[in-house]
Image (cartoon, rainbow, N blue to C red; front, side):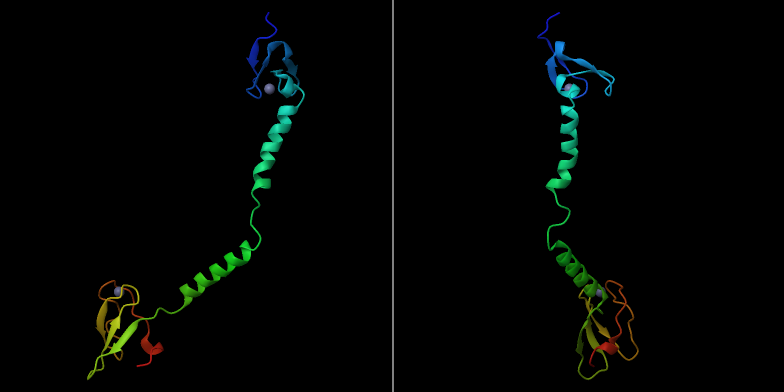
Length: 132
Ligand SMILES: [Zn+2]
Ligand SMILES: [Zn+2]
């Protein structure tokens, strides 16, 4: 038998001289010298631990900024949509620009007609909030 014949280790897939392979109680097979001495196991543990160590979960200040942005988004979503309105002289009607699609249509603020944007069908917001 050629002592210098290098064979692949079943545990670490590395190559080592066949003569140095030993049966390992934990692997339940013959392994290369580095696996036998526990070096491979140590390397594996390092690899597992590395990703967390290399990437801290959140950089300093991240939380604060993120919270702020989320708050802003929430405020934006909660605020009443603003429709653009123009009075039509000599009538009780207004020219209303849909806050969603910007489609302009005539709106009767007294009868609240039409209730929906004729273009995108979104509900027209309560115009009491506007100064007519
Ligand atoms: Zn090995
Ligand atoms: Zn619309």
